[in-house]
Image (cartoon, rainbow, N blue to C red; front, side, top):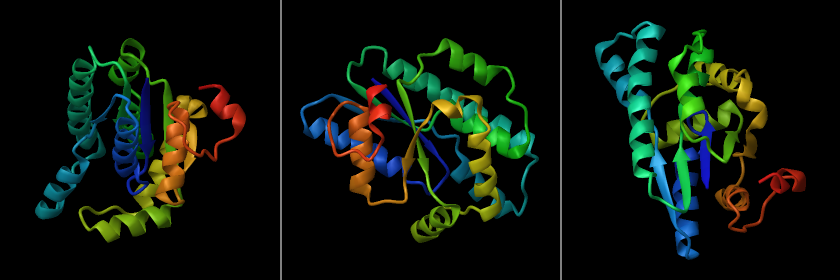
Length: 201
């Protein structure tokens, strides 16, 4: 079972991924959390220190290279794993960034989506941009603008595969979000998702 968590920065993906993995293992199941970052937080720190921002195409090349490397490393780790793989971000996140920046989907990422094992479910964390910004400012580890986050929200929604995503209301208590994720992975929990949604998984 593979569950991929997507969403804008500040939506709570990484925290939820940790909680989901821990909840499954504490219930006696096998679960592993694998991150697929693109290094945006680190790179944004570099650009801020240099008072310079590269062209969006340059940013995309750097981020895509790191994201693809992490995807392939994760695939190697999962070759003999039997259990729930909780994927914190994925190729879909980079494609959404391309949409947000007005860049084409390209060839490599869609090809990798076709040839690599697909997640059984994509849980997309949905919440207001203002809430996400407040969370980002509270943690104080990176910076995002309202404009960039709004563009990324639209970028996700323009993805052809967005219609297949399971929308998670991330503007709720962490326990409620965890309940939805546990239900999607077949590990119980109190879900607020529609019954027909759960029946498909």
